[in-house]
Image 1 (cartoon, chains in turn red, yellow):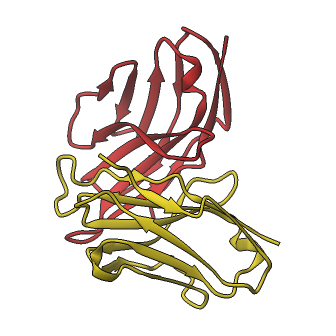
Image 2: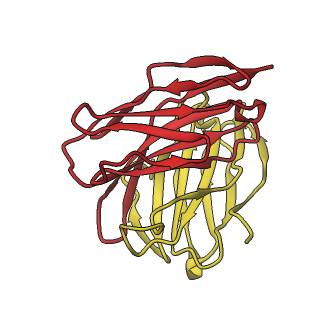
Length: 117
Length: 118
């Protein structure tokens, strides 16, 4: 079974600063996707960024970027110019294809990020 | 575009009672997922539907949990009878499905139902 490990249960960053959240995963698959989801207190999971394993180029979405190291099975999220609205739980997730229409998504335990003024 | 709708938002029941959750996915999304998120953990997949057929229910405790997606749109998840350890947030998600690549496999989540079993 694929496992996703987020080693930082809690992190704090000051507004406008940069923070990096760590994620490692274990798999023998070669074709998969990696995701970062954000879960604010409202509980709704919101997609932050997605990375395809066969793409070497790191994904970026505005202030969010990833450092994808396939050989090391590492997938960290960098948040630049942190904003108060970035305060949330952040989940790293691994997805692999299990059938023609089935995609299994495994989540880590999450990192609680607090952005302070 | 309307998002994934779930109801109720909160539910409190006593152990051994029954409870049902409802989910309406994004219009046109073929794939629907139910996840269980226990406090302090990431979501865990319970069951996945493709249209009205079950794709994966390997982690669904079938002795007490059941789910259906009649007509391939709305879905209900039922627990009967509930146990204390069922206290969790139940998340529903949907995706366009049908293809591995592109945006077809992105899952969009509802706000969840928080269940407390006393």
